[in-house]
Image (cartoon, rainbow, N blue to C red; front, side, top):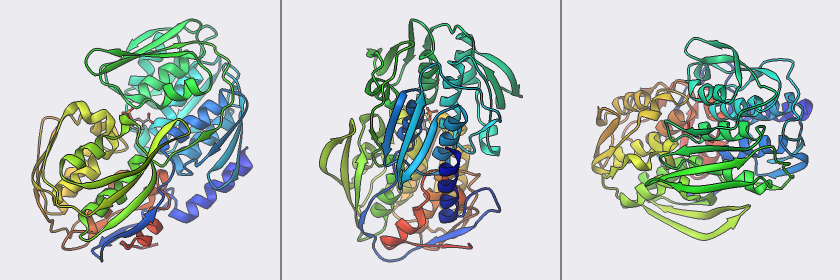
Length: 464
Ligand code: S3P
């Protein structure tokens, strides 16, 4: 593939400024009401999986609506390096000629996943399920993230960790065995990345591989396994948990994938429309998978006017147009059990909470500390810069909303796209503009963030 895919990578970098080079500071300021209809990019989780499952299929998988952000493009390159033919045939339209379960070839160079936790962790499972050796690497943010959570279950399945940096971090070299042990793994954290890595490795094992989680995490892997013809069973486990069981060594059949719009990206224009007075914005075709709707539930509890219009099923996922109108928000208590269904949305929820009246308590945020940055630290530093009162008690973040926020500060984004977008959104409604030190990482998940927000009336100024 590489020629076609690298062309699209270059195009993306040109749109967003890329993030390999010097930081690009940016500023957002108050303007008029936000108005209009927008389409946000394809879901990042589904996009990674579409390419990966296409690779594990014999034949051609056609994908539409793929997120062409840096994270997903790195997964596309990794799939190609492992033997699949990956081709971009138009905007968001991709074709993958897979090699089948067990058919991967060893890559000649290390696989570089850039900033992407999902891409790297899922591909560790894929490589572990094949008798090949591969090295995984990434940028400074990804090199700092914990990978033991993936290596532990893979080692139990017989995968050899040939090399790893201190603390089980990237760069990591894995060697998949000839005969993998199917296991039943009770995951210590509700993480779709852990679950998916084990299940993807389990594709290469004889017999049944199961993953148990005590809180259900996003289920795109299970859905896609079934979509491609694997034998997968999902049973309830405990009060909120699930047990997912997969029969190994299936022959996956190509199946078309249409990627719905990403609710985690929709979260930014959504919160922007709520906090900028007079706004009325419709975000089209957003995925409403119940394991991804924690933010919608929370914002509605806060009094947000969000109407789900034309609810429908597209490509096996529920979607709806979200009509969002500026609203007076009230502080709420967000239970820890809701965290897996909105784990990526807490930074922008903290922004909404700053403009609410009263206290918002977000419980059980330990996983936020190990995302693209320590998001708990990055969010509190951002609130501080904006003059918003908050405190942290254990793993809970408490924001004291006053209905408005002074702003005027500069936020460090720590190579984290969601921190960058959250605090730019904040600046649309603060008294004084908000600055961020680097906008370039929005390219990982939302390359067109600036033109799209500008199209509905927001003001973002960049140095580029
Ligand atoms: C993802 C799972 C989540 C999420 C990430 C995408 C996925 O991570 O934060 O952005 O696609 O499986 P965890 O599974 O580690 O919570």
